Image 1 (tube, rainbow, N blue to C red):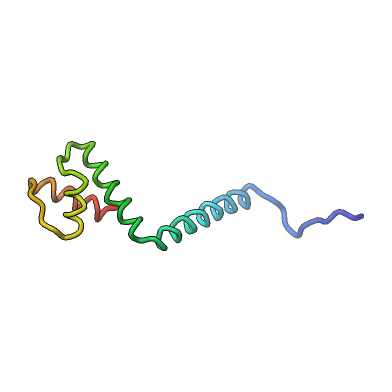
Image 2: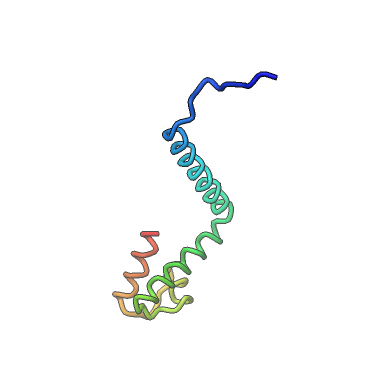
Length: 91
């Protein structure tokens, strides 16, 4: 039995690029599974915005944030409404 010698040398560059490609493939597969359930993705984005801004003392509840991002009017300070809208756009 003879040993096979591939027509290339395994280098640090090849290993680094292979790792980068694997990370990109994983990200793409995660994103594609989210895009098959856009409602779930939107709910998670709303929860992320609410949680992030609650840490920064934004007083809107999750229901208010959801209503606001669904285009409904919410009785709240204008600054807090803008924070919610901007954070959602940024995500």
